[in-house]
View 1: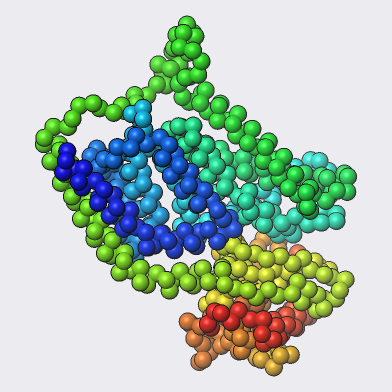
View 2 (view 1 turned 90 degrees about the vertical axis):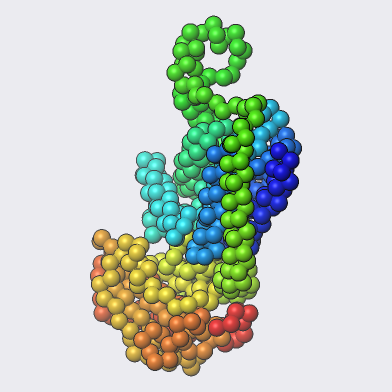
Length: 530
């Protein structure tokens, strides 16, 4: 036992320190995403606080199979993160933290593993699936809200991600990326379960329930805004009305969540509330508890045999060796991480370029002023990570103008739109033309179709200093160079005519010229080298 105690503190220090280098950049990247914000810090603070309150202050090694397996898998994930795929760093943290909690107990002798579920909220879905989930979630909120508005006979028009009602427009995709996002609801449900000592099955069930009530929250908010505007001519999207509406729906969905949680416990878990005498006197409760009761692991008071101790020491020693190897590997790889992290976080934190909200209004006339908004997320992959978006509602079409704020490498936007359900009918590069700023502009024109809807995508790029950028296929193209991408995307309900296509190309030339002029004027993000 003495040798175990001597190894305990160094063992846990190695396990945790082995994962710090990559996690620093992961958390820095996660906290600047609008959809996550301060959620990771709140989750970590809650877990640390609960451990500090409940822990019996007896530090021990993971000598039983749950702790050993969790810590071992966590270290394997950390090594994978260092060698190949950095996303596994957070998997390693969650598993090793769960292993630490499984190896320790509270003051009543119960495992601390029930504190671990909130850590799930730290895991960002990999391989771009987070954007796919957000887009699907926004589409469902949009569709269901429109169905409710039809039942309530509220007049509206749907323009892609926007719902237009008399006097205002509601951008559903912007609403679901704020503080009221589904990761925030899920994290709150998992923290609630940890505070209430819910098991893993209950915690995961509550997390799914929270995502559903997040969907109800956003649908109710959209319908409330539309109804108030239509019935009372009150704009709930401004000032105290906005906050009040959100708080009312938050309170309503919180009460519904608690009601659903009580329903789950009543149907799926033993009945534990009330006095013991009343439970024993009710034969239905006795039968129900006997049917659903699960044997719970209790802390054994007997010491393990000498052979099991030796086996545990060997396993702990092997895990310690893996921890040392993981630490060395991650420290070597961490030297390469800042370059990757800077490409992520510099775009988020350091970019100070803010295009004028009305810089394109003169192209379509002052009577066709566009809706301007800033997109600071990965939600719309065709818009880029951080972009300014202008939406113009013109006769026969809707045109979106998108300018990226963070310089990045060239992207084939035709393939991105094809991944969003559009079919590419034609793609070609137009002849190089001189913009008003004197810089050449080579435009890529793409004709798209999705069902009965037609689209015309035109895009190009310029260097962050406003100089000419050589597009792929040209002799001077540099795949590593960063650029500011500019695009216009027009939607039609009928195939656009040739005259309309020529007009769109002329409009794009004017848009591109306006962007180049602002970049040349000194408002460019010069702190990011092209």
